[in-house]
Image: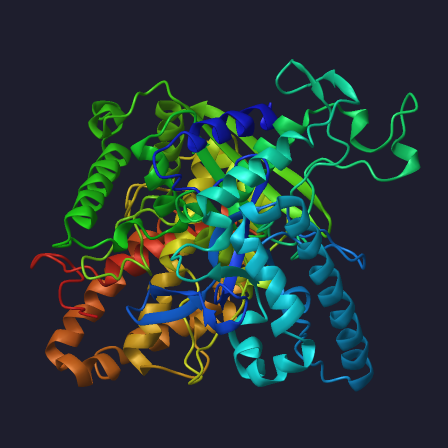
Amino acid sequence: MILQKLNQFYERIQGEDGNPYGVPTPGYSVQNITFRIVLNPDGSLVEIQDTRKTLTQTTKTGKIKTKQVPRQTLVPGDSKPPGQGINPCTFWDNTAYLLGYKKPDKNSAKAEKEAARALETLAATKEHYIALSDAAGSDQPALAAIRSFYENHWNAEMAVDHAEKLDDFAATGFGVFRVLPSQKDVHEQDAIKAWWATRQHGNTPTDDLGFCLVTGQELPIARIHEPAIKGVNGAAPGGAKLASFEKHSFRSYAKDQSFNSPVSEQAVFAYCNALNALLSGPQSHRHLVTIGDVTTIFWTEKKSTTESLFAHLLGGNIEAEPASTNTEDQIRHNQLQVFLDILRKGGGASVTDLDDKPDTKFYILGLSGNVTRLVVRFWHVNTIDDMIDRLRDHYQNLALTRKKDSHPYREPEFPSAQRLLEQTARDRKAISPLLGGQLMQAILNGSPYPMTLLQGVLNRLKIVEKDPQGKTLENVTYLKAAILKAVLIRNFNQTIDMSLNTERTEPAYLLGRLFAALEKTQQDALGQVNAGIRERFYSSASATPGSVFPRIMRTYTHHLAKMGSGALAERIGSEKATKAKIGREILIQEIHTPLEGYPTHLNLEEQGLFAIGYYHQRQDFFTKKTSDSPESQNPQ
């Protein structure tokens, strides 16, 4: 199923005007080109040019950053094969093959070995172009110029004069040729492309015919699946295989390698290049996000607006899109607003508002790398309409009342899956490697959230974290509370309000509220202290309240007595502080009265509800009160 849908996607994008995905046709591959060797017609060198492009990015903090990146270019032949063999490419290659130069390694012995190999590869390249020129005859003057370059105008010692350039922009990619006065690279010239096509027709395989599992046709079966797939988190930089049979233990019915699972060379070429287009092609930003250690790609069976907006949503940047005077950007901004309205409104809104068909198939594939092989972490197929419904349900589960002046990065209405994962650990490296895939499956299938998500957040709440200045950070933040709310709703069938519900009488919720009120009382009485009750008691209070709350309640009476003359009085005056003290006493009595003692232990579900009660009550303290509220004289 996966290979079939990727094969169909290749057919779809190959037919788009201008080939915006940069997918190759048979006989070609997409490579990262960083430099160009410019020659005169007689083969003499004009210059070595930097062909990289400048990429401008805006960070989440609003800073503009630029960097130089290779140009992804369609070139003749397959990808550069790995290993130590000598295999010159046609019209493109790295500096060792094209110029006999390898950036010197700091290890002198290794540098000497690499320099010797560079001489071998340069000699092989020279022989390669001599053979090509002889085969083409006088019909290809560009080939004759490249041959003359190697025979009459270049040797490895000359590379030293260009070492600064070669170490700067040529070391990280491949180079191509251009022969003046043409303004096209050699491989892009019409005559060369026609000549290359005739060479491909003569190489069509006739052996190993079989029925392709992807197309159902009798075609030459691929021995290995090439090109390698690049851009998957955890995989080797040179690429990995989605399907591969390399050991004798995989042998079946005397069939070696990928003949075990017959897929035609045509289908292999299509699905591998489709995957590479989604993962690292010029349009990959529209189809790719990383969630935990899972590289997630997605596409629709037909070109759609939803497809182009989905990365914004999963990537967590959807709320940061500003209006623009640029027509194209303004169109995208308007589409995003419509998409957000669809997520908010539910049944009253439809993807038809984006000119998409609701029954269009949507595909989501999660991959991770295991060095040379890829692992499918999840595969999800649904219609656009059903997928939007699942997302809407997920975000409604997460929804909490946000501060009017809150920053969208800290309190996003539509938090990305990655932001949710980050709430389970202090460091990204500490996030469970399986959690990203499990969370995405729960979101897309509407199934229960992984319990490791709940456990991770609860464990994080019990840790006292400080900023670089030593100030204690909030533990029950907006995003952590949103996760707890979502898990309690979906996994435990709880009904959780977006803000404080004074009618709830579950002990865990009341204890969370009570703890927040006791903490606020201490702060109003003493101001900021090095180790308040939250730092000292939150962990035990949320798990074993019976052993902690009697002690905290004893300190509460002392803190309440000081409210009229303590830190709060200094800030707002003793008269207002005394009124706030009365309001606080009434509030704590109202919270405490329904409790029939303190439970000895709270399970995970109850610990989550405790945190929600704590968060709701904390947020209520900092919400502007009406004049007749008992807390109206207790400002932040």
